[in-house]
Length: 291
Length: 291
Image (tube, rainbow over all chains, first blue to last red; front, top):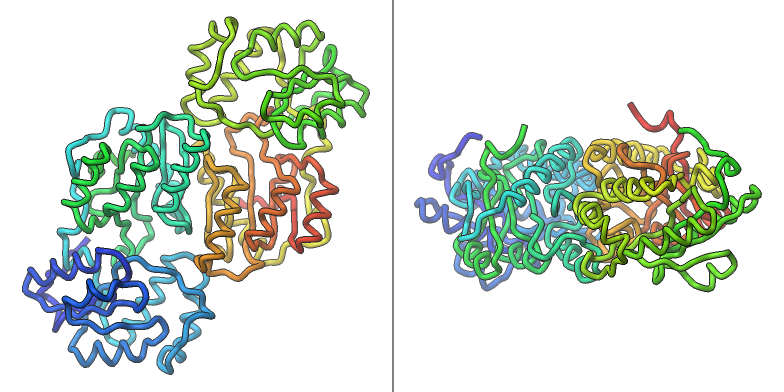
């Protein structure tokens, strides 16, 4: 993985913001390095108050032309796309003329998996002279470190569960599915697909409530790894305090994500939340990834 | 797969019944062949009215000794175990003396996947001279045939989704997880683990309601295949009218299950329900199973 120093780009960094705290963590890290940022929050996905601290232009899905003009006028060449994305229904999008010209590509985006969607989106922007960079390239401090954040460490049994989870996710790698799953005592309780991590964790909490999880409260690990085919510029798995809260409600022992290949927006908050919940949050080191 | 003719056994066939219509479909098929059956419905899982038509003894999880005595006294040697199973919490089970002597084995059953659980259970019974037979061996008419039940057939796009589903489930085969998933336009929307098929289908319906499924209503297939490691004597995937209703609510085009390796309790009802819902239900032929 090559790293693009924040100051290697030309002009301010354009950050297309989805929901959650991640876009602001990236913006703050880039600003700390002395580079200007301009935020392009997607209307309806981003808290207007949180974005008010930064130079920004709200954007709308489908209004590609306007974004293009604003970003060019602001002197942006490098683009970061980060934050929670809600998949809009194609029929709900109102396109401007410039977006309409790209409609065949856009319609193709709405078929197939996320990797497919994002790679078409990237080509769309790159045709117009923008350059997509990964949030972790301009702000490497948002990447998960090796080992535990917070005080708790995984037990030997938790490590077995982590190894099994990594093996299952590796088997799913070729299929553009499954960035996450829950394993408890070697048994796969849930695999994440379109529903996302938070809903998967809520499902485990529900199954526990119904007595349909055999393993005791305090066993089981949420394991997240990036898909092998994933374009890491805009689709790294991410965890935050909400993930910790969800894992705790699901009665898990902890969370394991691939070190260096997952984003932790607020590591201090995540560690504190994990300590309060009595669970571990750990970055899987390369030697734990199995054969 | 060898077939055990119903009359090859000694004495009446003991059917340990979980929930749903399947145990009765098996019992009726065996009776049609001229063999007696004795049902052992698990208390709380089986409708007492439905079971009243058959000779039966209610049983309780953990009261292994009593079951053993009753089945022996009735002259049963062959056991079929069929129907919906609710996983009890170990702490909720009250054991009798004979079951307590097997406690180390029973505790091992509560760790690991379902295959593991069932193979230990089978050894427990076989040690006492019982013989486990598959429901599909004594009642082969309950197995899914090749091709469509009902009027609708999968389209070319549906067949692509089926092939992808079979490929993903094959990749998961080694891990004792995932007998089912939903693929729509080549994108895996959901993978089944501990929650079961019905809840997975309800999840898709919910994601559609939230606008989080990109593909249109009427696209997508529920694909079910047996796990490669599965002991088919007591853990074949099954579909029934409730599966059809769930797939219809999830806005799917249809259901595809491996022909000869999945149980259809009530094929006429399933076909009629599929026709009413406008979806297909098809048995995947060997040549469609991919490389």
